[in-house]
Structure formats: structure tokens, C-alpha cells
Image 1 (cartoon, rainbow, N blue to C red):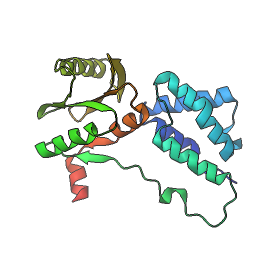
Image 2: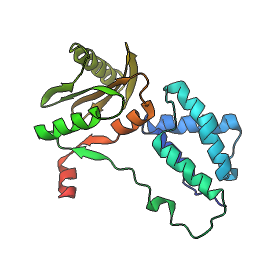
Image 3: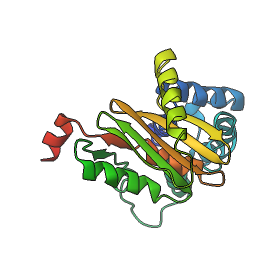
Amino acid sequence: MEVPADTRSRIVEALSQIVSRPAAENLLRRVLVASKGKVSELGPTAWVSLIEGPLQRELARILPVGRLLPPLQTLVQELKKQAQPPKEPQPPAFSTVEITTEYFRLSDPLVRQELLQDLARAEGVTGVVLQSRYGLESRLGGHPSELTTLLGMAHRLLAHKRGYRLFYTVLGEAQVVLRPFEQGWLAVLALKEANLGQLLYRLSNVEAATEDVKRRSS
């Protein structure tokens, strides 16, 4: 059975949720070279083995992601189905796969609270901090308030030196994910055993609404 021509691009898109696109392309290229695999010759089963094996191990060297990212899990499931003779005609894979970005209008204080509450409800999350043009808002639980100052300093340093999309570290007993957000930053703190892959995926799919976005949705 023929593999969709966009399998490679979908892997790059999934990896781009946690690293820059050039880094994602370079990561996949290294895995293909190390595995001596030619894209044109890879069938569904070979792609599954590559994603679940060398690619996941290489990704774990960059970030402690315990399991496949959700988009890669979806792709692996589709490839496994393609490797089996279909019992009946199946709808196109993309008809049921949709990655949706959520937009939050930060000028509305209720919307900002909704964003904090939404992220705070995720499994394993112990704190959320939002710094925007409208001020600093947080749900820190048992974390010290001084932590917000440390996060702000980390954001300014990263943004000034090289720019960044996502930053991950461990502070004490907490995992911390920090990202630029509108004119400020957004940070989520979680237990060490929390699912980092799900957390990174969730945090990378929320954005501040712009006037263009609001006009399109009206």
C-alpha cells in the first residue's frame, strides 16, 4: 500500500510543536541518515518503526518526553491501519484529524482568567503564570510568589539573546515550561511525573487573539 507523500511533512509539523521548524527538519534528517532509510522506499510499517524507535529516542535526548506527541500518535495509528488490507472503503485520513489552535482575547479579564483556569485544570499542573500588557496574573498554588520574578528574568534573557518558542527546565520539584505570549509570556508548572508531551502540545496550541482573528471569527 502506498504511503501518503506528506508523511515526512506531518512528522516535521508535529516536531515543530516543541522545537523550531529548521530544528525539526534537522532532527528527522539525522534519524533518517542514522537509520539508512530512503524516504521513497519507506512503507507504513517502516515509518512506524522509525517514529516509535529512533525518532522517539532522539527526541528524548532533547526533552524528557515520556511518550509520543499526540500528532505523532495519530500518525502512527493511521500508518498501522494502512499496513493492513482494508476490509471496506475508508474515508480519507484527514477527514477526522484536526489540530485546532485556541485564541484568547487578553483585553478581557474574564478571558484571561479562563485561560489560567483552563491550563491549571490539566493533569499534573500545579501553577500557571501569565504576564501580558494587562499585568501579571497567576495561580501558583503552593509555589513561592518570588518564582514569577525568576520566570520573568528567564523570559527576558531568552528573548534578548536568541529568541525562543518554548523553554523547558526543572526547578526543585516542578517541571517548568515557558513560552512567549503576545507581548509577554506564559508559564506552566507541573509535577515531575506529569506528561510533558501533553503539556508541551497543549501550551503550544493557545494563542492571543489579534484583531484579524476576531474579525474572521465574527
